[in-house]
Length: 173
Image 1: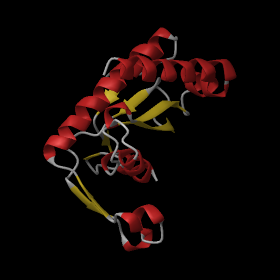
Image 2: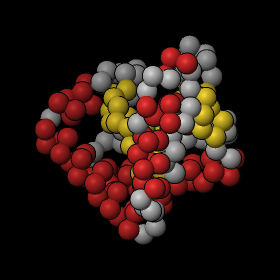
Image 3: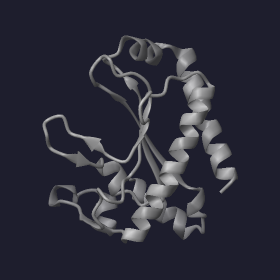
Image 4: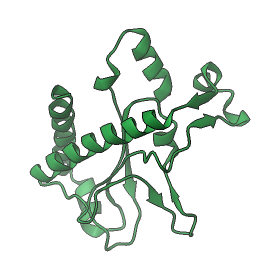
């Protein structure tokens, strides 16, 4: 769906420099891990061409364009734009007293627990939006993070910080 929206934005003449894709999640890591983490698409960990499997052909987005490809320079640019926005988001979250992971809250890849190596989530590497992030708002296995995610006031602070980050970051681009 995201790529369909990007293609539609291009057709209407939208400035893709002003488009951001964000996917919100909650981690389930070791209980000692705490705070928000933001993943961006590492150019090194993403190949340039992707084809959807046949089981996805029933979906309109896939039938419109079953293969997507991005040059290395496009992937580098996306990594830079996404990292810039992710850093701005982390600053806003800290200012709003929303916990941010203490060690390297912005990351270009995920390390699989089962020894499967480093990988970039599909929602980031197949996405046509130049600026794209996956936000792990907290760790559901950490008591403090879980309590925060249940708290409407905390969720409001998080949402407001996100909106502030979007407005401030894209008004300077």
